[in-house]
Each structure stands twice: as structure tokens, then as C-alpha cells.
Length: 289
Ligand code: ADP
Ligand code: MG
Image 1: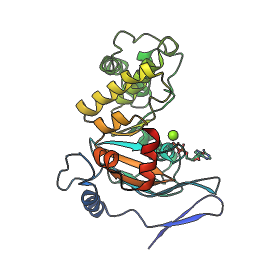
Image 2 (image 1 turned 90 degrees about the vertical axis):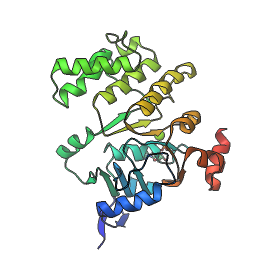
Image 3 (image 1 turned 180 degrees about the horizontal axis):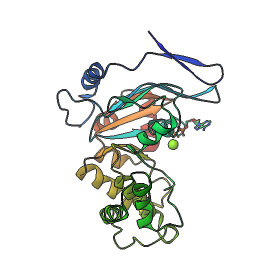
Image 4 (image 1 turned 135 degrees about the horizontal axis):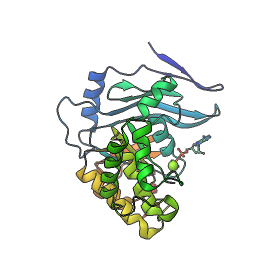
């Protein structure tokens, strides 16, 4: 009864088929209830369900070994871990920028793994991503950068897209910069445009991959402020990879520590920071204090 997933090269992995939705939700609920500040509702299902996720590059470098994680609607999950632990690869698998080698990722109980290119395009709309390097179009204005996904991907008309773009740019404090192009903006402002662009698509889940790591220290605060606002006053579900421990502690509903391609430990921010259970978590937290 095991679905066989073939890796590239010599490695093959036997992982079970994705669990039944109701059963998975029940198990996840019991598992996560004490680990997150999320306000759990009896009977709710996670918005993201990751089962036995594995990713191997070049047939031999196994980067994700067996990641199992559920994320709930409106939850803010902060992912910590040393460089090379697989954090970016996990995010990139969730929005299908990478193809998982084995395992399952489900969004609202729909399996997104193993889909055709056409389906992948549809699925990606539900998964916003904010990158360390902003990834804006340099020749387009802030406004155009926030509009383009709405018009090209969501097929919104220009007026609607413009109104939404203005609203989201105002929300990140850039109402007076909408006609500026990325080279005329600071790194922090560019990242705020990137956040506005992601939010304007109204994804089910917003993924952040070290969004402040490329910024000068004085610009980090503005971007974290925007993310904090989004987390506390929006209804967005967020998975945030960051080394910003203050943000993790204050804003996270749950902290997940990854190392060596697995989730080593997870829990409430105060649990993980003040009373880590695993030596590897203790070492990591010790090294960054
Ligand atoms: P993190 O984000 O936690 O720093 P990554 O997910 O970026 O870690 O990378 C984990 C490991 O996977 C690293 O050893 C990295 O070199 C390797 N890796 C990532 N992407 C690729 C790739 N496209 N090809 C080969 N190896 C990769
Ligand atoms: Mg990374």
C-alpha cells in the first residue's frame, strides 16, 4: 500500500500515500495544539500539510530527509535553522519552484505534488513568496510591479489592479513612491514593494525566505514592521524563514527549528527559545545570541 516515488539517480523512496484528510486533520490538531498560539477551532483542517517531504539534488545530495509539518489558517510559523539545513528548499517545494523528490504537500487538502505544468501555474497563485533579493522588475515602477501579477496571472482589469496596488503600497508605507522604479528605491523600500506585490495576489499562504538578510541594518526594522503589521492585523497565513529572533519571539505563533533536512523541534516561541529540548537547538540558539 505504499506509493513509490522515484528519485533521480539511484535513490528511491517509499513513502505512504497522503493521509485521509479528516484523519490527518485530527492527528495534526492533537499534535499542534500545545505547540502554537494559533486559535484552534475544533474540526479545522490545516491549510498546508506536508507529509514525508524529501528532496534530493543530483541523485545523491539529500537536502530534505523527511519533513512533516502542518500550518493552520492565519498562523505565523517562523522557521529557524543553520545555513544549509534545507529551509529555502522546503519553501521552494511548497510553491513548486522545486519538484519534491518524494512525499506530499497539500493545500486545503488538495495534493499539489505530481501535477502538470498547467496545474502548477494555478496552484502557485495560492502561494506568495517574498525573496531575500526582492526580485522586482527593475524597469517597471513600484505600481506596475504590484499590478503585473494581478493583470497577467489573475486577469484582473487595469483599474481594479491599480486600485489594489495603490492600497497595498499605502499599507506598506509607500503611497508616495508608487511611480518610482526599483533602482530609485532603497533595499528596504524595494522589499516593501515585494511584500505589497505578494499580498495583492491574496494568496492562501505567504512564504518569506530571509526577507531582511540582504538589507542594511537600519532598513531591517521597516520591513519587519510591515511584516509584523501583516501578521498581527491581517488574516494572512505566513511561513517566515528568518534569523530575526526578536520577530520570531514576538510575532511567531510557532517556531520550527530545522537542521539536516528535518524538523528537529517546534513549539511556542517561549518554549523553543527559553527551554529548547534538543541539543542541536540549544547549540544553534547559543551560537546566535
Ligand atoms: P538553507 O535555506 O537552510 O540555508 P537550502 O535549502 O538553501 O538551505 O540548501 C540546503 C542544501 O541544499 C545546501 O547544502 C545546498 O547547497 C543544497 N542545494 C540547494 N539547492 C540546490 C541545487 N539546486 N542543487 C544542488 N544542491 C542544492
Ligand atoms: Mg536559505
